[in-house]
Length: 400
Image (tube, rainbow, N blue to C red):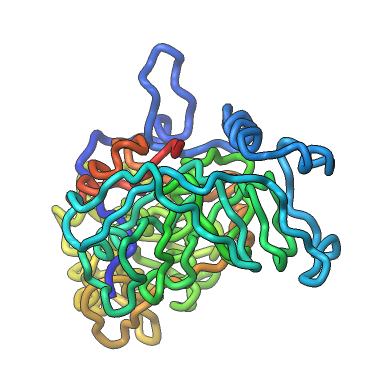
């Protein structure tokens, strides 16, 4: 199993003010995205434009508004739900590879087939996507035994607008803004047609409504990483009053694990490791103990923790700092007792559970300052991801 997170990139020091406060108009835009509780400017306009391009007169006559919310399950059932009549093109722009290898195998196909829609799926017009190391490892052929057939459209994370629904879809409808990880198991039979395309087909159960305070790029950065962080902490038994150490706190999973531990699980003490230039970032995320791994070996410090989340492949060292009876959850690398491996499974219900924390601003996405990358820059985005220097998530936005 491999890691599902981006490691850190050397960058300028981060302060709490630069992460959370709006910048004066004359300054360059801040690319580390930490949204406030206020709605993001432009998000509704993007959604409206996307919906306008895909809706037909029939859906407008049905009285759907420009920003829809999920319908209750009582309004639709497998026996009575009608397939939405929105007309979508038969072909789309998509990044594709038909052989395993480095980033150079990726090609932009301007006439790729729009994926067929199963009864339990919705067709999403993708607005933004995000990369994870598993995308690169899959493209390199690391998981051929359980992979989907080639050619492959890569990508797990996405945010977009529902443009068509299957006959068994109960709660989502055309026009809904959604986000999620589109393959239930990233290593076991992932979708052949992924999220780095204009359209993708996704089971309803894997999606949640996009938090209103987040724009599409921010929402797309979350699904795989936040579900990995949450699932790892949950499986490790973290609860209120316990302490946790996060190895790799500036990465996609690590940055979210810090926030979840603090604000969702109620940890009494949160510690994390990062390089010198990321220590201020860790503090802004809420850590109580920020450990500079270039100066201190965490396994040689006196503190012990109830839970250690290893997001960087140091399980052999992690077990040295866990309390007796504690847990070490390992996302990558070798596993040493009492450590255990965790691999995420996509579940829209988990995102729904976490949405209030995102809406309130207690948990915030972290987008690498080099991005978002344009849809035309997918090869460059993959190459950058594979340097192992990314802070937070590598995002592709907008997708045409």
